[in-house]
Image (cartoon, rainbow, N blue to C red; front, side, top):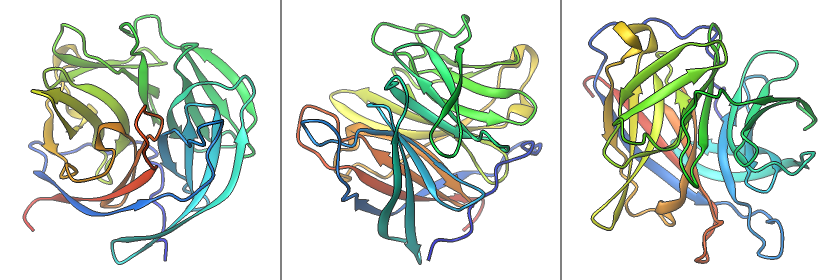
Length: 283
């Protein structure tokens, strides 16, 4: 059955340098058999988060829906997905990121089209809208698809594209600023936390007609002068996964991470959950 959910990090701990090497194993993938939205009957899920209070998985869609799911995992296998609720948010925001924080209003999301971040309560009511930081770089057709919550620094945000700098720039609502290397042509699809406090970025890269995905890990507490951070990346073993070019969303719990494919592309596709295991150090 569903294991106990990973609690949100009150304050991600300092990670000793150098960090343990990271490996990723593909455990399972499962088609999500739930009703979609609109004429095309698509879910178009864009990000995930585990709820530390209930153990349920929250998901947001491009069409403004907030879903609450129960994901059953047994011995590293995805067994079943049950939808507990779905709510259409006021204003039908184009939701492209999701994060959780402690408190009465735990859900945070990004409206990509309006360049806003939202505070949402557990019943799906938007209680506040905020402008994204002006310093956050954006590029035509690509805005912000990744966010995370840090107890001390607040909301963490990163632009989807690194632009000409060759770096991912992480900004916060409290003014903190970090930079870490980016793969050439990489786009950030999601952010999440490892159990040891390292921040994870889900990168998508297109090169020579091929699509690949990578997880980039960094410790913000170990960053140097100017907020520049060392990081390591590992390719995800998902080349055989259906709709791999639409892989989005990242939610980690212990040594496992859950990702989701977006079925909103032109070609017919199904929403799938992908279960990964993070392995650090010798195995």
